[in-house]
Length: 335
Ligand code: NAP
Image (cartoon, rainbow, N blue to C red; front, side, top):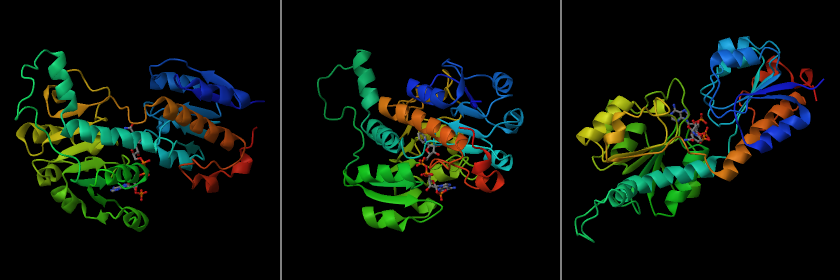
């Protein structure tokens, strides 16, 4: 009998086809994510769940699927999954590390440029018929990027990819992380700083940590007040890493110059959110990994991970490696 996989919502076709080669697929082909009740209703008899970051895989969900062996998420972040509980229950979690690194770093760099050089504001000015003077010595002045100091918070895959881009802009780069990365320090000639010091010296600060209990509101009023009044904050990690109320105050009162944000505490960002009225903020709708090639590769990689687990093999995108001790892979083999 083939293993059963529940796919929570529309994903690139390449992954659905791959899963269908090995599994019976319950494919909920809808763009909107399902409610928790709908998920619970559909996973009572499945061996695997294929989800995205919008579906919470909490204790209640995991417990409602007694035969569940693996959760595959089409994201590198796993903050929507109760990892400890999944591990305890012997449920493997596979995600998509690496394949979205360069695409997300491109967006982070794009947000730095767009915010510093007021690209979106300029576009709006033209479209709204407000471009009255052909050229004026003091019109639409922004901040230089080339040669400035970039502070990276979280020098993992995406943080390091951003650093490589910044080298091409002759930027001075520093980083803060829970662990030192001497290999990358040496490769790129970058400096480790404690968070407070990084915040004080950087012209651009880009956040690349996962969302965890430790990183929730890592950037709050105290941290924002340490930044330069000319600093620009970029967040392409997860919304709750930044205390949005404090950021709003910082942007309104000029503690910092601007922000480029791809992620928010509440997504989609409510239409009446005060960020929308601020000219010094560039907003994108959580599109860090949203390129054709990368989304296809992410979709495929999560499916490959699920298939590997169901074959009793260890996938290279397994997140909770300790699970192997709780439920050995050979006991899973179904394909
Ligand atoms: P990664 O390689 O795991 O990098 C994260 C880095 O942050 C690691 O070096 C990690 O150290 C460090 N870190 C963890 N906790 C920290 C803390 N409390 N303080 C300082 N540093 C800490 O992950 P990645 O692939 O670069 O992705 C980073 C995050 O970006 C993801 O978790 C995801 O939430 C987000 N993301 C967003 C988009 C988007 O669409 N906007 C796309 C892709 C990813 P350790 O390795 O020692 O834990």
